[in-house]
Structure formats: structure tokens, C-alpha cells
Image 1 (cartoon, one colour):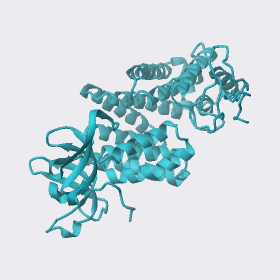
Image 2 (image 1 turned 90 degrees about the horizontal axis):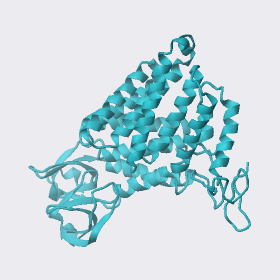
Image 3 (image 1 turned 180 degrees about the horizontal axis):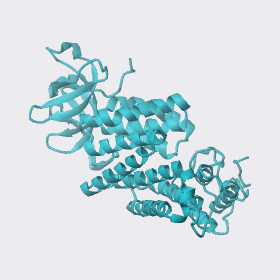
Length: 434
């Protein structure tokens, strides 16, 4: 199929109906996937819905429902998932389509089709729920609805004889529903929400684990999430029990699908986010630097995953510091042989590098800086540990009473050490990996 169409005046045309004018709902062709070019992949929402309805009718009796979902959430041209408002609009249309096809839930397939549709909507809501509280609330409501349907299906006496052949799918859907609930609660940083997140993630883990080896990887993923939530990002236990499984999952995706696959890109992004939160700054920066051009090539410049990589990489390379008198700044360079440091700021306390009003450049004594965790540094001036001088490491913690940083070296053969403030220097540009 051809996805590139332009009208005579150069505006993009719908690849389905070939019209560039508003549809009957007054909406112009839209695009939010990984299609490139000025005109590729544009379509009216109404045309996409009709296209998906036609395709769905052909495959609706597939018990897995996986192909059915792909029709509604994946662009048939670039074969990447829709994003943001377009993904949510299509998922709502999917729910309405299933409701029309199954006005009464009297078979396992009817239940599972609706549960799958609701979970597709949850995925679309979660995509933008970091900045939209209303999306979080709607996501929690929708996830609870899917769980209620699963419970209703499992307790429906008239379906007992039929459920056996759907056991694997039911376990996957129930585990996913609990996992999705936990994900929404992790976005609210209150202690009460954290405990709810742990509870639902544990329910997800137990559900997957009840299925034995068939859902083993999903159970391990939830186990990792629970440990990350319980231990907190500053604990070494979080590193060993949380990041390590994500690292293994990333390696598995590369082995199975290759570095350029969407699965590997997503796994790398997830791993890098966990590495950054656990203060593995060097490993996170190297991984994201490698995957940013890959994501731009595979997904495109405007894709949400590409944007996320850019955001995490931007923060990771900012070399953030705090002054003894207060305020967060970006360290730019050393001067006077390292005795002075040029800063920019102050910056807002958020996940973006956003200057506050009046932000400007400052030159301060390097001794007045507190270097933030995850920042790459090298040792200097060590006498007893002279062999560590010049070795690349990242900061994992700071002991205010002893005025020492705990640093972990990129060379894992070297043991972590606690060093005085004057014995570390920020590395502004990572050298090539050895």
C-alpha cells in the first residue's frame, strides 16, 4: 500500500480515502507514528477506525486477540505503534467496536476481547499520564474495570467448561491488569501510592508465577519492579536486585532481535532509565548515546521513545551540582587548574534542565560544590590509592559527616572507595570505552 499522498496545494492527504479535506467530523488527516516524509502516513481518524473495523471483522474469532489489537494500535505503513491522542482515540474506538460486537458477555472470547480492548486503552493513557493526572485516574478506573471483568468471567458458572482452553490468556491478562494498576500508582510519589503500587505489582507477580514456566519472564520482571519500589533508588540492593535483571533482559532482546529492533530499543531505554535512577551514570550515558541515533533512524525524530532517550540523556550529561549555600546548577567547566568551576543556573528541581528566572553563569570555588549522584568523575591526588588516580567512576552517594563520596569505577575489577571531595573531578565528556 502507498502511504505517501499530497494534494495539489501540497497538504497531506489521507492514505486511505486520498482526500486532504476535513472528514464528516470536521477533522483533518493526522499522523502520530513513525512514518517519515512530509505526507507519509497521514489519515483521517474516521478512516483509520473504518479500516481497523474491516480488518478486525476478519480476525475477530482469533482467541489470542493479538492480531486484533495490532490493527488498532499499529500503523500498517511503518509498522510502529500509534502515540498520544491518536492512540487514545483509536483505543476508545476499539472499546466501542467490541461493545457493539459483543453486547452480552456470554463466552470467554467476548470477555477476553473486551479485556484486551480495555488494556489497549490503558497503554494509551499511560503514555501521557506522567503529566496528566486525569489520565492516571482514567487509567486506574479502566484497569479496575478489566479486573472486574476477569473476576466475573472466572466465576461465571456457565463458562467453567470452556475456560480451560483459555487459561494461559486469562493469566496473562490478569497479570497485566495488576501490573498496569501498579504502574499508575508509581507515578504518584506519595507513600500511600507507593504501597498500593507494591501491592498491585505483587498481585501481578503472584498471578504470573501461578502459571509456572509459561509466564516466568513476566514474573521476574514484576519481581524486579517490586524490589526497585521497596529498596529505593539509593540502595545498593536496588542495583543488584533491580538493575541486573533489566540488563539481562536487554541482552536477551539484542540476541533475539538485534540492536535495531524496536524490542531492543525499548529494553535499552528501560534499562537506561533504571541505571540513571540507580546512579549508574556512566553506563546509562554510554547506552543512551549508542541508542539515540538508532531510535531516530527506526522510530523517527518525533517519536516518544526518541524524545525520552533525548530527555534522559540530556539530564544525564548535564553534570549537576549543588552549592553549599543552596541551589542546583549545571557545571560547565573547570578553570584555574580545577580550583574554580563555571556554573549555570539556578535550575528547577525537576526531570528537565529548566533554568529559573535570572539564571546566569557563575564562577565559584570548586571546594564549595557538592557533585550530584550518577555524575562521572575521576580520582586525583590520591596517595595511598595512587593506582586509582585518573580512573573513571561515577558517584553513588555522599557522606555529609565524613565529607566523602562513595564512587564506583567503570572498571569493575576495581573495588568501590570513599574519597574526599578534593580528590574527585567532574568528567564533562566521557572518553571512549576501553
